[in-house]
Image (cartoon, rainbow, N blue to C red; front, side, top):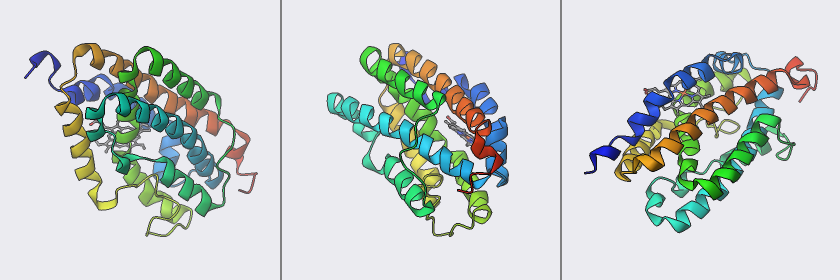
Length: 219
Ligand code: HEM
């Protein structure tokens, strides 16, 4: 085993811990987890995440084609575009609203990384996949808040794995570590992961500052 490269997931976790804390403590996430986020903002959140996941999945598909060993990390069961589209359809919301600046910037960063440091895309994927740890709890608050069924319609993105979420997360961690990535790949992944946490926090701030935050759109 290459000791220089052991423990990619531990490195990612430790080097983004303060970024996670800041994202989690942001007012948007706090309203989300308390179930007090206005419903229109939930719909806009999903529509913005659709931009981000659509771009990420297209890039990951190309990355996996060139590096088939990555299939263990990005398997079809981890796709989020489907759940996002289903949630938006169930909620009667638009799936093609324009991207806000934070989402647009993250998509532009992915495009740049895809040509310059493609393995760094895994750092972005780590943040979004890892967010299923917390969003499972958020889903429990969101369902009663927006009168969504416990069977998951309208909250599939937040809780895509149901009871097997902890097992799916363990599988993800094991699959990433088993790649035994060199430090030259892990370092750009860390930077990309840190920037992704900041982008998601910024997206929450933009949504809170948007007209929809007043709840006056009635959507
Ligand atoms: C109120 C909001 C949030 C709560 C309550 C929350 C909660 C949690 C919890 C309980 C864990 C599991 C920790 C562990 O088992 O060690 C976790 C992990 C994680 N969360 Fe969050 N989270 C929130 C927001 C977010 C956001 C907005 C993101 C990024 C988009 C995010 C990304 C992650 C990641 C990447 C991990 C995995 C960390 C690791 O490497 O172990 N979380 N979160």
